[in-house]
Length: 103
Image 1 (tube, rainbow, N blue to C red):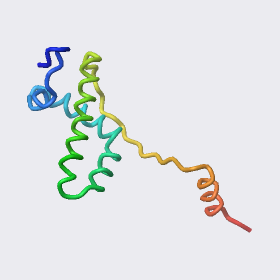
Image 2 (cartoon, rainbow, N blue to C red):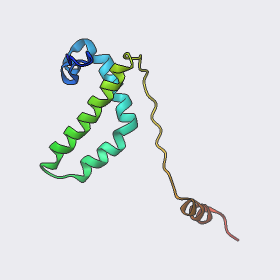
Image 3 (cartoon, rainbow, N blue to C red):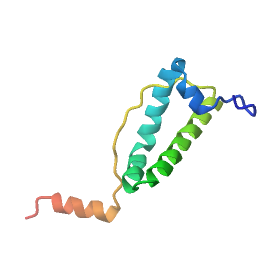
């Protein structure tokens, strides 16, 4: 336990089989929100960089766990994932023009 605020150590909590369902949901929410960026970071690194990158992402997951714990461990539902892209307005207009049926 972390004596400052009674938040358990994330890795100890995650290793407890009694927390498996909550861990899965917490990780699912994390991946739904951060997964694309995380995988992009992992793809961009090489060799020894993977360890540092993985630890950085695990620290972000630990921070998410600590926020969730501090909120009283609210019940998490299965997240839905939707991929969206932001396109600059000029690029979107150009794409519409290219896809339109010109005379």
